Length: 79
Image (cartoon, rainbow, N blue to C red; front, side, top):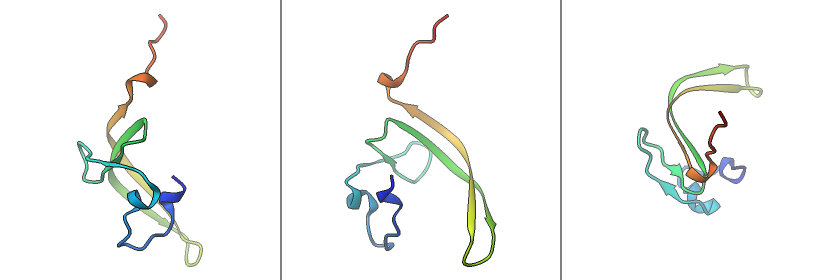
């Protein structure tokens, strides 16, 4: 994850750059990472901008529209 958050030029495919596999999402346009055991597909709700240059921060608020978890990570709940 740290490698994929680097400041790459817009023409660089971050999946290829870090050796991950894109997979088509079900509810959103952005691809998922095949190697991830948990996927959360989200839709953008709002971006809140705080501060002034050079100390600017953004808070991104999203709505989770789909969650997928690999079967081997799920456990039965004890009664």
